[in-house]
Image 1: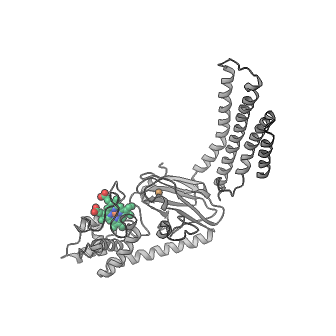
Image 2: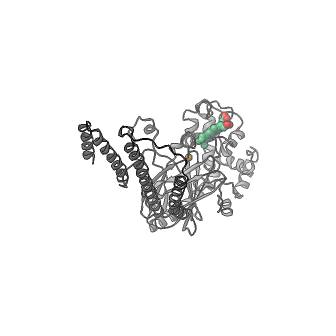
Image 3: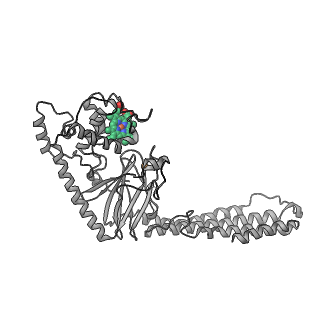
Length: 445
Ligand code: HEC
Ligand SMILES: [Cu+2]
């Protein structure tokens, strides 16, 4: 095709002395070009076009997109064709005299009615597809998707399985000091695992700002809005790994919260889910035990450093110096070197209206104790305070630190009272989107 195009151009130049002839050719070439556009867009593998995806809905969305695209091309050809034809045909050099009329009721009615008819015709298939996309009834599996700065959290309804999904691309690749990997910024530690051939309903919400869960292969793109629950669904035809991104500008690390979905054959998925439930139960038991343990300062600092670097350093930085005017420094912070209860409080409850989120449901007591200890002793903060898991448990249940004298009694009473506020890392309930609130308002939009 390119060859023939260059031929046309060469021909035009060669014959440019014959102006009338080349004009006619130019018009034909232009119309030919317009007709040629849809052909470029057809191959599904081109990076320029929408993906056909791996679900029935994504196929429908693709077809709809192509249909509308072709209609637009046809309109383009007709409108530009008439326009250029008229301009060239009635040009001054041919001695054509301009007509002096205006206001033609007939023409005006015509150019109102024809577009209306075209729009209505386009709306019919579009509405059908939209209605199918919105129909979340009769699902086989419900998954709650919660966005927060800057990670996704997934919870399997009616199963004791929930986890966070973090970006795993190394900082070095991001900075450019290391070769970028194949799935640069599109890889996570825990992908969302789902079965094929089952209808999966997603309930989307957010813990802080608006995010948007977008996986092009499923044609699912839904805003995750704090305080609201949006619904979406998918039914995947083909096992595989599908990648997506947060599609709503949600702050500094917006580009660092990708989505990875692993679609497994149904039986493999069932095995996976059963195993996750077992692991969750084992983890819970382990954490109960951790509450009674007293860790040494070294143990607390080692665990604390890991938690800090994994979860806090994105904002407060590894060197504890934060970022001027955005994220306060931990080094020498009045809170991290001051009142212990206030320090624990901001870590477990966060600070509303700021990027400092509540970590009570994101980390377990042991991790919270360790990270607070770390912040109070790293970077020359040297307060000497060692915080234990049982201290955190006390703050979570009573809002106070255990009194030195009856610490024993407090530990006993607290471990016997199982409250809803009990955090359990991977199996967490989000403060704003617990299963209870979701059950009571599943239709909320
Ligand atoms: C998404 C960014 C972000 C992350 C992640 C984050 N913080 Fe913060 N943090 C903030 C911001 C912003 C503030 C300031 C809040 C305010 O305006 O008072 C803050 C304040 C604090 C303070 C009070 C400091 C002071 O001097 O005012 C402490 C302590 C703290 N964070 C601890 C942590 C710990 C521990 C973690 C990890 C478990 C963590 N933060 C993770 C953003 C973050
Ligand atoms: Cu986001």
